[in-house]
Structures are given as structure tokens and as C-alpha cells.
Image (cartoon, rainbow, N blue to C red):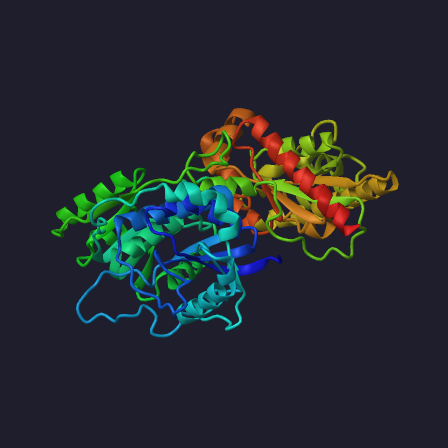
Length: 550
């Protein structure tokens, strides 16, 4: 069967049997849907009765929150490529005067469904047509979709599981209700929305009856984050959150605010009743309550959810599903497509490698050289253009005077550096002389590599972006490390004071600014073996791109 972009999965199994069914159901659904899978829960829905089935309200239960957590946890293990969204429009406690139907009109979804799937157990193969028709009508009553939406019964693929499920006894007594609240609050970074975020958001929506307040970390709260340069912009994170929540529970009043400190509005909003935390953030929730009491406000109920384990984590990543792990997996991959380089010969394919002082740029260049790339060291070429007889030599003397010369008539670059440091006008005068000469030598070396039949050149250049040399390369690769680690490396390597190291870094483009121009990002923050794995991944993916171009 062909793949569909977006699907709705209608789960009809009783809540007490669903935990056993989720993994195989998701596995089957992932063979048909490749992008977004909406999950609609209607335990006990009978699609084979022959009569028209209508959606009903499901009360918020503890078992329901368990199922939601299991759904996202299993999805992360089984079908991590799918954007799973558990819909809650039909989940609400009974109250006087409330409407009987959760869907007075069909609910529009952000992604239009191409197929509807169900786990409904078909008792008689002859019922197949009747059940698929009933599923179509039921889904059309709930959500905006095509009247001829294809329907797929997953049950034939789940038959082996049925015997195990039938042995699960329904718990005795009444199902435990979940305490709900008018106003609920959470906080987080919400970078690259993943299963753990979705669990937090879904459970919060389950708990909230009126308003859901979300504090999203802004610049001040991102300073200590791992690979902060790869965190999505605040506006994009908010946009993704809004779309997700509009799908999940459109009746909620959603308020998203920037978080510039660990507390935000949670310690001043008198209407809030509950804060959703994990084992990891529970202490933060307790700190919020301490502040609220100091501010004369009632403490919030702390509703704790479990962390989701990451079955695919590596030794350097956290055991839980986390955004920092997802960011680390981006290292070495193509983040943005290369710009138009039709003005360049296709081979050798030229990588422009840059990064701040102490970032390990040159060590990565040497690793790429060991894999077969021609390394073009722009620092060495910079030294060459200052040599007596070189084109730039006399022009530098004319501009800055003969007092920059050593006794052997070579230019003393330290003396020259003092003349331009902190003086943008004088620095520009120097770079206008030197940078074009370095660029000329780089182009000459690339031409030589082409004549020798080389496939890849790596231009190792600290000033690649500042000098505007991107027109010489097919891709820009940037190496990043945190500033405090860069300062430590510079002081140890060059024997300078920390203040001088900071000044040097501040005179260069920031990591964030460089990453804006990057096609590929790498980091030498961890052990050399980790760096080598990144470089090998980047090299392997690069070879694929070169082959595709040819």
C-alpha cells in the first residue's frame, strides 16, 4: 500500500488493554504514514454495529494520562520520524449544561488527513466494507477531511496480539478520575518539539479546563544550554507550540510568554492552580511555590510526570529524551542547503571551514585531510603574503611605516597588530591589502588540486565569513564551542590572560552569527573520539552530496 503524509489513528480498545496494543499499532501505522499521525481515543467504540457511531466525551482519567505517556514513549522508540499528536477535544469531565457532543462542527487540523486508521478488531471479514464506511463517517463527523478519505483496518496485522490482550482482565471498581484545574502552567525551552515535550503539553492540556500558560525560555535563559547556537529562534518555537496546541485542544485559552528568569509569571499570576513538572524539574516547582508564598499567593499543586527514556541515546547523550541530544545529532549533518554555486567548477568540491579562536577548527581540518581532502591553511598563506618580495609586503610598509620591520627586514606581525588593534579604520586598511592576496593564493591552490584530479578541498580560514570568501566555496562548515571553554583553551595554548582571551573572542564574529551562515556545524567540545565520529559522519554525507551533484 502507498504511503500517506498525514493520518488519523482512531483507537477503540478499552483503556486497560491499550498499553499492550500501542507499540504494535504504532509500528503498523508507521508503515503507512510518513509525516504526521493524529491519535483519536474512543475506548469501546463499536464500528461494526451497523448503526451510525457518534463521538462522545471521555472523562479525564489517570489511566488516560498513562496511555498518553505510553503513546509518546513507544512512538519515540518505534517511529521517531513521525510527528505524533494525541487529540483531546473529546476529553472532558461531565458538568451541568455542557454540550453532549464534543464536535458541534468538524475540527480543522493543521495537516489535512490523507488516511484514517483504526485498531478496531474485525470479528467477521465480511464486515470489512461496513466498518471502513462507518470509520469514514465517524472521522468526518470529528475532523475536517475528505468524504472519500481512505480507511485502513490495522487489525489483521494485530491478530497475534489479540490472544495476549484478551487475557488482560478489566480492573475492578470505578476508574480513578484525574484532578483537573482551571489554570495550569509549565515552563521550558521547547526546542525541536519532541515526545517528552508533547507528553508534558498533552498532560497539561488534560489537566487544564480553561487556560494553559506556557513560559518559553528566551535569550537570558539559553546561555548555559548545550549547543545553544542550534536552538531554534524563539518565534519559531512559539509558532510550533501554538500549532500543536491548537490541534490538541482548541477550546483551551493558550497564553505563551517569554521566560527571562527561572520563575517568570508563575510567581505573580494569582489565577494559577497547578504547575506540571518532571522528576528533574520538581525542585524548580517547589522554588516557584516558595516565591508565590513570599508574594502572598497560594502554592500551586505540583503534578509530576515521568521522564521519557531515550532508547537511542549514545554515551555522550542524556538517558532521557532531550533537545540537547537532538541538537548534538545535528552536528555533521546538512542544516541548510548550499547556496547556488553554479559559478564554481563542480570539482574539487570546496568546503570553507571556519570557527572562533580555540574552537578546534584546524584539528577538524587535519581530520578531513586524513580522509582525503586537500587542506588549504589560510593562516600559513597569511604569513606568506607578508614575506619580503610578496605582493602585499611593500603595500603594508607604505601604509604602516618601516618601524614594523624586524632586523632581517621581515614584518613583525605583533608590532603591526598593535597598530591596528581596536582601530577599525586601520584594521580595514590592512585587511584590504592582505585578504585579496590570500584569496588569490587560495584560488591558485584550488586550481592546482583540480589539475591533480582531487575531489575535495578544505579552506581552513578563521576569517572566511568576515573576508567574504564564501563565493570561493561550495559549503560553509563552522566549528563551535562555548565561550568559557574557548577562553580556557586560548589561555592554555597561548599563555595569555583570560581577559585577553575574552577580548580576542569579542573581536571575532560570535558563534551564533557564524552559525547563521553555516551549512554544517561541528563541535570539538567532547572527547577526540566524539569529534572523529562527527567528522566521519560529515564526510560520509558530503560524499553522498557530491555523487548526487554528479
